[in-house]
Image (cartoon, rainbow, N blue to C red; front, side, top):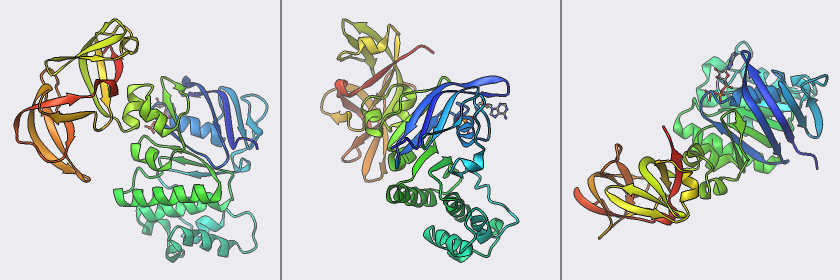
Length: 349
Ligand SMILES: Nc1ncnc2c1ncn2[C@@H]1O[C@H](COP(=O)(O)OP(=O)(O)OP(=O)(O)O)[C@@H](O)[C@H]1O
């Protein structure tokens, strides 16, 4: 079966400069890929090119196996690409009712309103059918946006930060609904987001735009186990991001943490000669113990079912949160560090 989307060697230019130098990515039918990257890294620019709103400077884009743009003579217009698009700002037509916003996209005129109403019902906004978009809440407008994106029976759904302007609860509900829709309908989706919660709930794989390149697309668990960059470590939900002095010692890396020296097995290669490292760790790799790295507990808070103690360590500007069974007393504590679970990146800032 053809890939739902295949982009090959795509470069994108905005305002006369290359914002994406090289992007290659394939999406299998029924797969959801989250496209992440820092603000300004070119995510929207890449989505616009796939959607046919702009042309690539180089490369080839295929949808369902057919070339829709080859940066030369071949160009299939956006409305003929079989895409459903959902935008951050909803982009509903303000002068049309909710029902009309969805119905107008349905190609087959027979039973248009009935089909539009069924889609609105699926997203829980059928009761808003006669209203204008401006009279709806953000969450309701985004539900209408999803219904409209599906109305043209797309092969591929493209979403540009679809939940970013919604409150936490609506965001969580819509994420779950979208995931269910993708799984049940077999739709493929490419969703721009830099929210780790979107990755956790939606992504089969994650593609990251960094330094104008799309890095290898990987599953969320592989990204958690072996993040390629500090940005990927944050996205994957690892803790930390603290900067420490470091040096190579044979094949290991020796880091200074809170006045103690720790050896990270096999860390020298990852350090690549840098004198400082950025450290990340999975929750649980740092724990309070009877003996270990000296630290000072400055307080604790309860967070989603467990306690987090805030520790100050010598030489670190920011306090380090550490999960614990009960809040420890303030003052001197010791920290056990599972050095083999630390992730290390060279830092040269
Ligand atoms: N119309 C434009 N003309 C010139 N430059 C542009 C235009 N639109 C975007 N850019 C620039 O292209 C780069 C990529 O922008 P883009 O909006 O694709 O990034 P993004 O990753 O989607 O960012 P964000 O997460 O903030 O939405 C940025 O440096 C931006 O300033």
